[in-house]
Length: 204
Image (cartoon, rainbow, N blue to C red; front, side):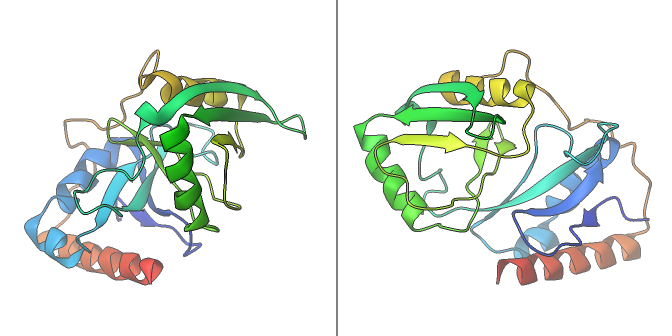
């Protein structure tokens, strides 16, 4: 059995899923030299900070494929431009997050959202993806609303991340010890190749 299951939908920023106990083993596979050589140079693979919404047991975590658009590998927009963020409810009475940016952030955010309509923009802190909302249109003025299938707890945490850059109680999902099933080298290689091929197809 494979420790990393590919996303059957074939679209979106989530490329695979793994049980929390297998995330360290997946990380080791992805750190292998032969895997890195097959992956695009501008690709970053990062885990979601919390279990997938569809997993009620809280065991399955999502692996995101993030494309680095800056030559230096840094994010095109960082948290220092955010002046405020708060959890609230949208017009449909669903939990959401509103955020405001300074003048420089608003200008760059308008360009970033204009160039990425229909795509997802990941919110990453300490190497984990907290949210990857889709861009519905160009956002000007520096005021944005992040909506999705959120709970009040999630929007509160996300607002804290955006506002202060740290969680009250950060979640840690990657275990240092490999406790996932052991695979033969041939199986590992086959799994890596199928994953890389699927990943490249997703990015085309």
